[in-house]
Image (cartoon, rainbow, N blue to C red; front, side, top):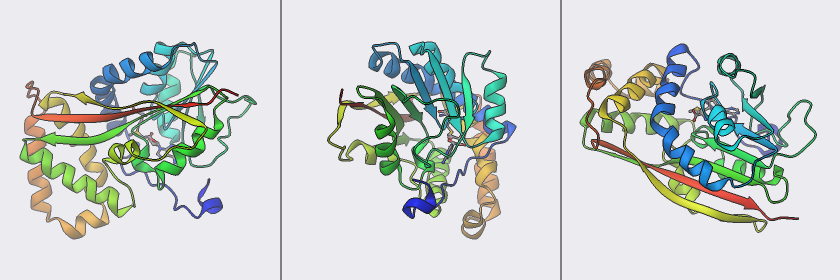
Length: 272
Ligand SMILES: C[S@@+](CC[C@H](N)C(=O)[O-])C[C@H]1O[C@@H](n2cnc3c(N)ncnc32)[C@H](O)[C@@H]1O
């Protein structure tokens, strides 16, 4: 399903691969891992043989998968060499990492002839040109009876004006690349192939502190601040205001001012 095979546009990752981007994913891990761990441990009832973490970034989700499900082999896949270097440095040898574009299927894993029995992807779909198609293609790679777990954002509600403004601009930037920030709600209603059984399709609430949300947002702002669409649409003053507002909130410990609804989907490929 690479761009040339299907006519898909190439996927664009709008959120950067720098030290700051990796630090942002550390805060993402701090905020979202407890909900992900509950979802994964509830869904995976048999020790996997081969678990794949697609769009693994610096490896937080790969280590989560390895820790919670104890696969015989765990492989993280990402196309960012910078993130993969970090992932390898933190893995203590328990996980393998391969560079690959996850929209190019069949997924090529050097040296592995077997099919995975667990595939996991978190916060990847908004960066893919056709997430529904990608999910359907990944599911075909599973061994019979295998599981595909996906976690994406349904919605984010907030009473903080700066958070609202930030989310509006990020949604617009992703839309410029044909992507959708709140793709979870769309995935929730996608019709599934006949050889897949939906085991879980639910929204889980995540309540970070205001400071955690502000840190995630302020670390992401430099990645899109000079996007051509943003340059053409928002005056520099407005972005300076937004950056200052977010910075001012980074130490607020209060929770409840911003709430994520996470879509958790578990699909099982029918046994042979
Ligand atoms: C927001 S990060 C999520 C990282 C991790 N799953 C987590 O939840 O912490 C998205 C990751 O997807 C990767 N990515 C985006 N498009 C990709 C593609 N087409 N093939 C492989 N990796 C991709 C990016 O490089 C980035 O590391």
